[in-house]
Length: 227
Image (cartoon, rainbow, N blue to C red; front, side, top):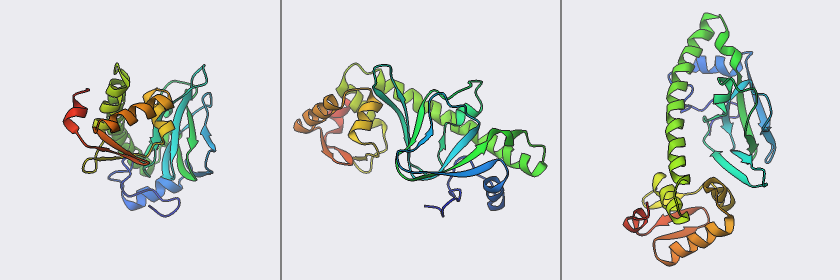
């Protein structure tokens, strides 16, 4: 983890920026480090966006409340250097349409979109790199969204689970989970009890084994057959 308030070395947005350019980005008049306590809101649906948000430390949950009171989870952001709500800084949409809440004590670098209009050549050199990196980030996120849509379009809960598990990077045959069971149920758009029952059935059939923070695939071919 980087020192408090520092931009992580592996940050995709800042890839190829020099150390001095990173420091300029962090300390210029368009950027502010904001800190949030666990469960504190970062933005609510209806708030007006004006900045890109870069996670420095902590974790952020992106979700939306449905009219029935159900919460749909869109993302659980835990990796320092990842962006939060960056598309809103470039869309002609006046307000956020989702909520962002700190899942734990969190620090964020807010970069006002006005930085892209600064005429200073030293700032323009930085924003040219940011724009190129943003194109790559947007492409990657579009791919991730298409993958989630494929998961959500599954006809059965077991198919959803199979697609979700096999679409994630495994450590050996184990999937580390950053989501709680409640958050995973919201991500898959299913009821929490239904998720627990299906995981229990799949474990009883010897397809997977479930731990508190991970799922281990015991029979990958059988799991893949549900896709």
